[in-house]
Image (cartoon, rainbow, N blue to C red):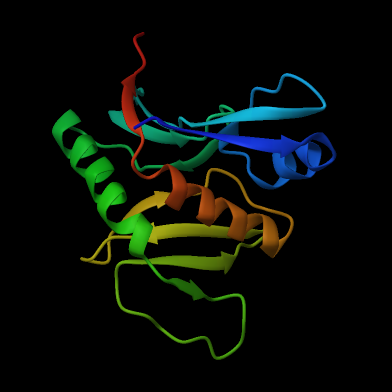
Length: 163
């Protein structure tokens, strides 16, 4: 889904804005200019050697989440629909802290991997992992930004990669 909004945007804030909101495409014209925000992430469905999977990409092309490999296209598309439904309302279970509260599904799970990097995954209502970050983050804040980007891009359109 593409949404457009027009705003006046002071240029001194432009660089800080771009750094914090990687899911925005920005067009600027002058020192104090109109900025057109176009939210345009996408699900990219593609074949692999063992089946079919999807990546959720932000508008800047960075993969913010990836699925498991499915044997059927229909199952892959159902998983995308599950991300669309569950991501916007899913709370965060932060397993990086001691004595964390175990939450009911659907939920995002934030955890530390064996390398000491912070990762997240999204569990559906039935507890199944439907999306995980493709790479570890060096800071917890960066991983939390990834979670917010998934939420912001959950309603994106589906695109198919042709081989």
